[in-house]
Amino acid sequence: MIIGKVIGEIYSTINHPFYDGKKLLMVETTKFSGKSDGGYVIAIDSAQAGVGDCVLILDEGNGARQVVNDPTAPLRSVIVGVVDQVST
Image (cartoon, rainbow, N blue to C red):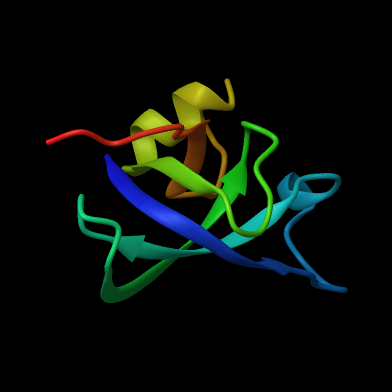
């Protein structure tokens, strides 16, 4: 699992049919402190997140396919929740 901040939406005119009607978001990965760690992930949104939201990402192909309930889905990362607060 990864914590990150949504920094944008991804739009495409040509894609795999699986992605039709699904929202792709670009997420800047962060440390628990909320500071960027310099990475990013492109993930399918299953939590109705938006730009600026802190999100929890499942970044493992088989688990992501289980979330979308499609064993043949061509994806690796899926947003599984919007984070309200992080405490360490």
